[in-house]
Length: 147
Length: 168
Image (cartoon, rainbow over all chains, first blue to last red):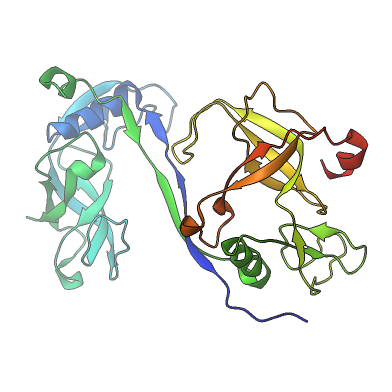
């Protein structure tokens, strides 16, 4: 006969402490962020990929020519996050957005602190808000904001 | 960090993946863990063939039946049936290297307990070695297998291979 007892519970964190080597292209991108600059990579035909890719997604050719782009651009797509989770970029409601920076041809995924969903629109201009002490990570950009 | 080190190119990115769970032990494991909190080791007997599972999960994986009988109290000593020497540090394991991870068949049990060996050189660890539990001070006990700090050799003669070969 089973004796009914309350089950014990415990917090259990499963974590993989990955580190990855960046290589020259992504290394330049993250080194640039530390200087509050965003870099893309330029293909032979002039198309600029931001974030940079090491290889052309169409031909597989290596791409190496790094170029600085603006830290402001246009929202091309977005989704509103009503209830942010602890690991997300902002503690208050925000938008995840694909942002095509000026001088770039591909969009970058980041957070937009617009205050409210009503303030978000496709085509709106946004500008990066940098943290005070950038360390060489995508989180050096706290988020983008309208402007 | 010096100014020159700060200006080195960024070459490595930390990308941890973290999953936060609330683990629920269930009735059988809860009873087993609470027994640890009282310094007792409780196994359970399969109603079909009488094998003693330690720790028990509340059902027999071989026969697919619930294990509901009275718990079987086991002694805190047994035999190392197999082991592995670990020389690689890990962020979440606070043990001096190298150490031996051991699988202990407690006397009277039919399944093995995973633990570590203490008070012994890794050159001495071997299959068949007799060991006993070294408990933490009682005031530090929790409902946890970690109440046993490690197992140490008893100095008794080895258990013959034939007596534990079915349990490796």
